[in-house]
Length: 119
Ligand code: HEC
Ligand code: HEC
Ligand code: HEC
Image 1 (tube, protein in one colour):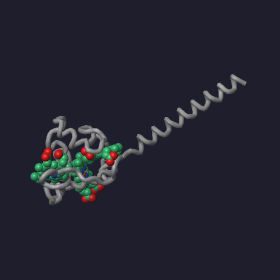
Image 2: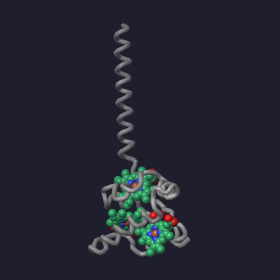
Image 3: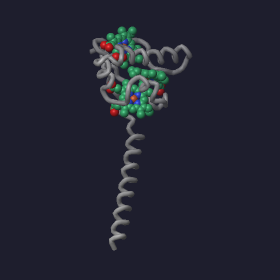
Image 4: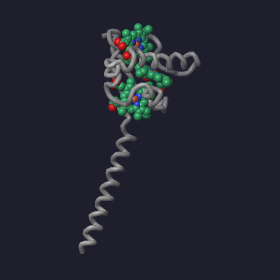
């Protein structure tokens, strides 16, 4: 009887651990972040950013997240502590758009007002 109770307990532990693993796994693969964001463009004005559209078009998260982690507010935070240079992210955005435009491919805005909204 004691043995059976132990076996049942062990089985429950294994099932619970497996359940946790499944939950954690799906949480990771599903956290794509917000589909639409507004980035802080300082005095030049807010920058609306279709995050989800870029994920679909570019596929690789590292096109941007090679520069900063997948975290809300991390750009402002890293700019404040000096680990990310002012305009570094913007140059990543415009750099890609300009390169693709030159190649004649469909891409995003390259003019200031194409990205920055007037405050
Ligand atoms: C074209 C650039 C770009 C690409 C590509 C990109 N992201 Fe992001 N991502 C951003 C920006 C910008 C932020 C906002 C950071 C901030 O708030 O400071 C962000 C934030 C996030 C956040 C945190 C914000 C939230 O709403 O939870 C998650 C999670 C995230 N990205 C996941 C992903 C994943 C997963 C991929 C790939 C499938 C991806 N991103 C591809 C630019 C990008
Ligand atoms: C590696 C290349 C790449 C990077 C980096 C990138 N973009 Fe784009 N962007 C694109 C492409 C490609 C499109 C066109 C997407 C489409 O038509 O589906 C686009 C489209 C856009 C659009 C227009 C969306 C529309 O529906 O008209 C905006 C706005 C934009 N990008 C802003 C940004 C901002 C802000 C950043 C930086 C945080 C950024 N992009 C980074 C490739 C890039
Ligand atoms: C493809 C979109 C895009 C274009 C085009 C663009 N910007 Fe930006 N800009 C951003 C984003 C996103 C940020 C916020 C992220 C960062 O700090 O890099 C930003 C930030 C800035 C900042 C604040 C930098 C800081 O650290 O305080 C200034 C100033 C600025 N942009 C000016 C301009 C001017 C001037 C132009 C035209 C010559 C321009 N931007 C074109 C997307 C863009």
